[in-house]
Image 1: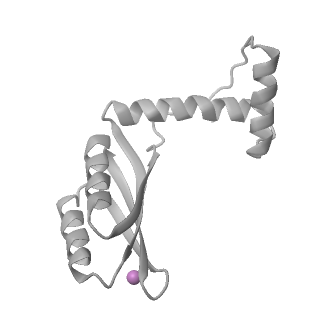
Image 2: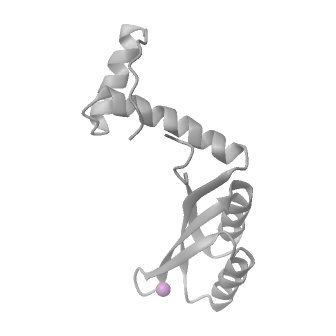
Image 3: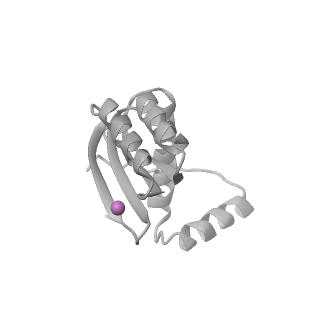
Length: 138
Ligand code: NI
């Protein structure tokens, strides 16, 4: 673990109370970890905006009875093989499939992939979990 530094921060009491209350709600039991995670969230946002190498997951659901839809999903994924680490397919029920695509690479390319999957007719919902490779966030 990296060396720890202590520093003083001045905040309005009301703002600090709200921060502490939100941190407790999110199960933080110390303020340092809550603040470090806020900083990391901003660093990760910057990684995504600046087109750096990032990691994350695209999660989406669709009805597998629509055969053409499955072909489209597979075709798109083959075009993005260089950023896809793995794909997990879960049969949710008789009709619905859940797919989780783990990704690592250019943030722009991954956002493009997520947009293309989400725009396929028949994909009911798609999200992009924007995380980090962990290398630049301490
Ligand atoms: Ni399935």
